[in-house]
Image (cartoon, rainbow, N blue to C red; front, side, top):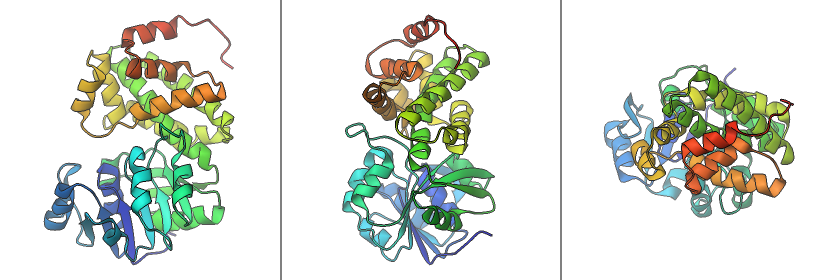
Length: 331
């Protein structure tokens, strides 16, 4: 049921999610190599079988190793999982030599300069079969082996099914899709709305406000997806609704935490220092704003998140702008 076991899987990225995926995949595949550009991460995994910075208190099995050398980590890999922050995908892949391996991209985001999805970037730089992973999946819960469901999208259904066999575990259930654009876009956009959810929490506005924002946010996500040619049903699935609910409500959400700190009055700079690890929604907000303008899609909530993050609008003023909009039909 859970498919093939490979001799070596390489994970590019030793942050929380990359390390969690590496730890999980080591239970199924013979060897897992995690590439990281952080010496402390590499030394921790190799010397102590641990990553105190990203996954404190969780032990790594002996068949997981780590390397600072990109090509060494990639050597003999049959599957390569990309788990670096989205803004680093292009630079890492420009140096990586990947030819014979199946690529699974787990990075969620949109390039701010090109407005390209990660699938666009991967297709430009890699001549290998590719699938794209998204869905509600906090790294720590994956690492602990708690039940998780995600979706793997590929333009070729056969590639999606092969990736499904390689990635799936009894506690890590994967579904397939051929809507790469929808899965990728949903996985990126939900981080923008998680910042809004956090701001609502930080201001003490209650659960009604959060539920309303999430529902209207899902509507905005779907509208932009339609403009880009995605299947609207994708946004009702794991990559859309599933990840939106988790990221807007879960205590482990970095984007929700950043929004909550800003709702309490912190500046973006100070909130980012508190969160420490990358909150993808900040960059994605900029790209979402530009995409919405390009495709003439109305996204009032995403627009106000952008205004707060990049145009020095206060959270209170952004809220006032949203609640004073003209009344209209829901659909």
